Amino acid sequence: MDKFFKLREHGTSFRTELAAGVTTFFAMAYIVFVNPNTLGATGMDQTALMIATCLSAAIGCFLTGILANVPFAQAPGMGLNAYFTYTLCFGMGYTW
Image (cartoon, rainbow, N blue to C red; front, side, top):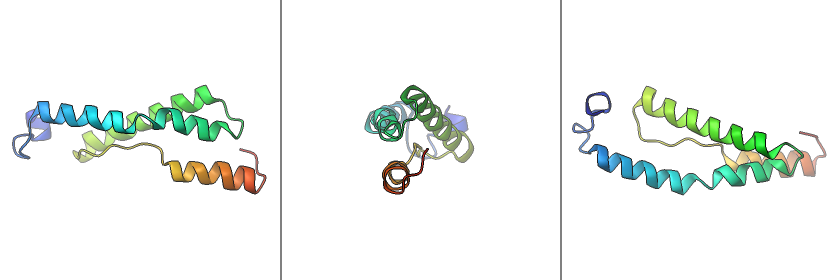
């Protein structure tokens, strides 16, 4: 792990990065429930939305960490989801 991510070179350790990862996960875990609830108001299947939310966040975080080697977490953006649900679907009358 140290060789691939260059932990010592960046002045950190595996333990520090693990604690940071767990903290980030708990700070972002709300998205797993809020995103399907917001988009589900349009009539979409909430189970499918939860799976898609989890998969997209996991893939985004994995690719950012492995390909870019930066400690950034990726998750679906709630602003665009709210715009889609409340402006396009409810406000303008479009179906999902």
